[in-house]
Each structure stands twice: as C-alpha cells, then as structure tokens.
Amino acid sequence: MSVLVGFALLLVVVFVVAYGVGRQAGPVSPGLTPGSGGGGSPGMSGHDMGGMR
Image (cartoon, rainbow, N blue to C red; front, side, top):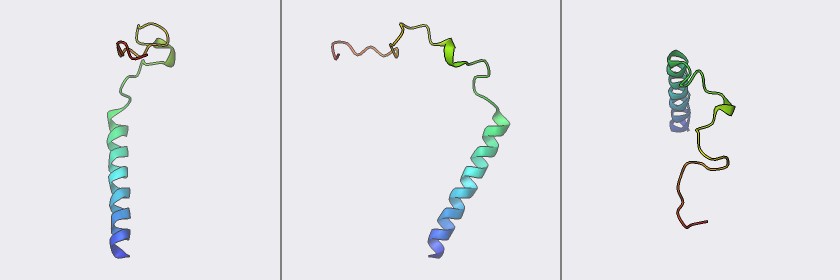
C-alpha cells in the first residue's frame, strides 16, 4: 500500500513541477488564434495521403 501512495505522490510532484515550468515558459504561440490556419486548402491537414482516399 505504501508503494502505491509513494507512486501517487511522485505523480503529483511531477505534475506540479511540469505546471510550474509551463507557467514560467508562457504560451508557445501568443499570437496564434483558431482562425489563422496554416495556409493549406480548407479541410486538408497538410499531409499528402497519395492515393489512399
């Protein structure tokens, strides 16, 4: 039982540290908005699937 509690505590510590690092780093793309798109055709993800349609 103590191993499970220790593992849960380790997970909490890892997530808290990751959250803190993320808060310090700030947003990855501050100017990114949902409507700014990637410049491809509408409905296309940018990956060429060739003849697999």
